[in-house]
Amino acid sequence: MHIEKNICDNIMGTIMNAKGKTKDTIKTQLDLQEMNIRPELHPTKNGEKNEVPTACYTLSPQEKHNICLFLKNLKVPDGFLSNISQCVNLKEHKIFGLKSHNCHVLLQHLLPLALRGMLSKAVCEPLIELSLFFNVLGAKVLRIDDLDQIEAQIPITLCKLAKVFPPSFFDVMVHLPTHLTNEAKLAGPVQYRWMYPIERWLYFLKSLIGNRACPEGSIVEGYLANECMTLCSRYLHRIDIKFNWPERNSDGGLRNSDGGLSLFCKFGKTLGAPKQLDLEADELEQAHIYILKNCDEVLPFLEEFAQIHVDSTQHLSDTEWNKQFIEWLHNCIKKMIVGSGGSPCTFMWSYPICITL
Image (cartoon, rainbow, N blue to C red):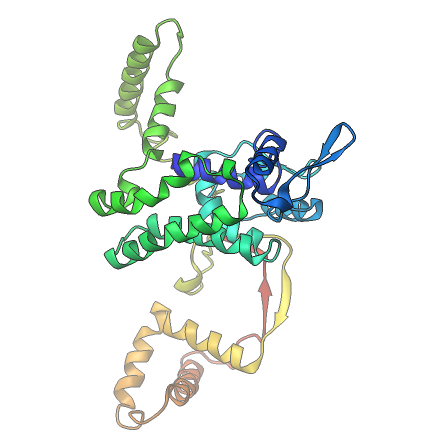
């Protein structure tokens, strides 16, 4: 996890040209000039000042704005990532305060999406390969063939990076990925070895400190108090405790209890302004047959239809079988309920967000 964070900080600081975080400084370019390599990055004298050329891996102000806007407006599933929009400053084009897990998600999933089409192929290709390396290495299930493949690919990827980025970019953390595949072969998937659970547990223990003069004793007393409260809360009924709290995104929801079909009697809540949409004939038919085949109330009719028409429906396609079943069920409902000649509505209401529990 710390390797991912350091590599992600190196990449983001260099391509964003962040002050104090970039590896492409005037000292780096003077070193390149002294070593007589990478002449396109050599600074030029302009009076008493050195003019620094723009490198191929440095983003333009508009590209920095696009990346910051992408992260600012990013929406991800709950628990997948922290609120990364708080780490983005659109005005100054800065990305700051990234935690280890933020860098983990950014390096494995978001960086290829954000950089694609902005930088040249020589820059994007090794960065995407590095992202895929950590993505395969962080999988829940590791296959020896995959590990052998990325183990053979990672030195080539680092060589491609060495052709683009300055030597100062390659600290010890950038070279460590070459050893991670062998470690994964010996120790197994990284989920059982990384520090995220331990960091969370240490954060909880630090929150128990009330007296900073005696932190150890304060942690012991706080832990015992928490254990006592947990034991007592098990015997408290009709009282809100942390064990019977609803989920974080739950606001109670709504339950359809008007005697409708069981398929629609579920907790949930819609958000946003509704929009009426007209269904096409094929869409209406698909929705109709889906509801009929997934309702417990219709199951007896399905069994009865299959028994009655067992011979006549053997050679029918799914579409023809569905049409015959709908017609047969419609006639049955007419006989059971007098005056029931209605049909499904040809429109629906669409909502931007639906939270279901």
